[in-house]
Length: 544
Ligand code: FSO
Ligand code: SF4
Image 1 (cartoon, rainbow, N blue to C red):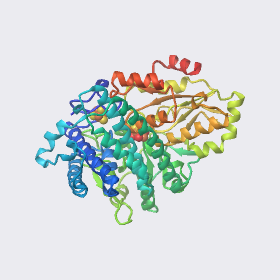
Image 2 (cartoon, rainbow, N blue to C red):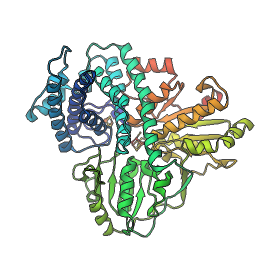
Image 3 (cartoon, protein in one colour):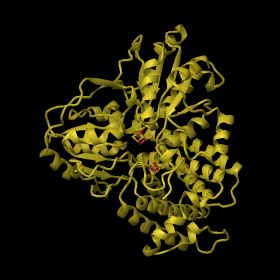
Image 4 (cartoon, protein in one colour):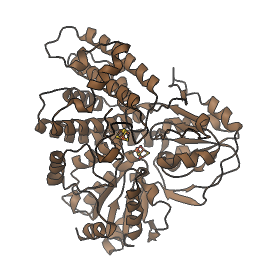
């Protein structure tokens, strides 16, 4: 195995023996094979599109497969192997549909090995198949951006929002990645173009979420517990939580969110359910402790899963659905024929469980997505004009296990009182329970929602640029100090670069998949930087 797609990659360079995330070599290799087959499907469908014969099944397959291979999403070897087989039959179908072609087909298209050859082939087709480190770095940068894009496209798809332009780009980009003769310049352009579609997919998902559930609004979310048994729902899929809320209504079972599902509480059409009682625990990486004390079943709708320890008492209480998977956990199948997913087994289990143990109490506030912030625009603009707010700090992104992430708590605490933090994603768990106060009624931490709601932060920035009559987004009093972990953060970063944002600082470490030359391009052209000490960084941000 070789994997260096996330921030926690071993020694900052690559997991080669076992994933720090818990991914075994077998799972890593079969994921590599799945991506290889997926690229072949993309090449075929890209060609078929030119002839007006593209397959929508192929599009859905590509989106699913890319999402499955995101960090922490799917640890189920057998399920991924089945997906490879499905991909091979689909590829054969597309090849037949295309017939004779004048293009030179890559190995991704022509290989059709049977199951006995899967693991040998997998060893040839991973990240290290590309020998030149700069080409490899750029191909993977795009590849990871596409994985993040796939995740967001899948959530939008689940809410019946699709966008052919995005799918067409994904297939074209995957087809480009198969090219052995592609140049560094072509790949830089491809990575930046990925950012363009990153903005588009986040806008699509924003429209899907707000169209169905209403605009997020300021909400106090309970972090304590009630007396009923509960179901804990994690991940990012709002359609899943909606159906779970509908199916649990009147059943004497409460629903709690975990980690990235917290922003569900901000949406009018989800918060109306009285039995959506609160948010339980901390960020994804704290799940081993949180799940023990929760006492009830846990449903993963997406990443981030931490495989449970051998002696974990909650192992039998884990369910997965969608792109997520874990060996030993029950997987809830997809919707069929317009029917909802069937969560009855989880609900029955919950009824026989004890209520969650209280681990904290009180509330946290959120719901500051673009519409809510725009509703407060006059107040915000006045505060900036009067000097009450000197600077905004975008601290969106992810949380993770690494000790160095204490930096973000210390940074938030050390920021002067006339600054406001704009956040989205699970990065917020490093400071959303601190008492940072408010500025004239505007809380000093404004949480827009999930990591895809970084789109909201961009919309807010663009609006402020307009209000202040500025030419350049970089002239705003906004600093970007972003924490990353997995590939959704990569698409958010590429999207911000596409919007022209410069001088983004990324931590706690720079991506291991950036070769020194590619890192240099990002530093020289976009001012991308790492982090140093809290004191030095605050001084640097406030001076610029
Ligand atoms: Fe966090 Fe995990 Fe949302 Fe990521 S829960 S780390 S960037 O999946 O997607 O913010
Ligand atoms: Fe390592 Fe991250 Fe890959 Fe897991 S996802 S194997 S931790 S680089």
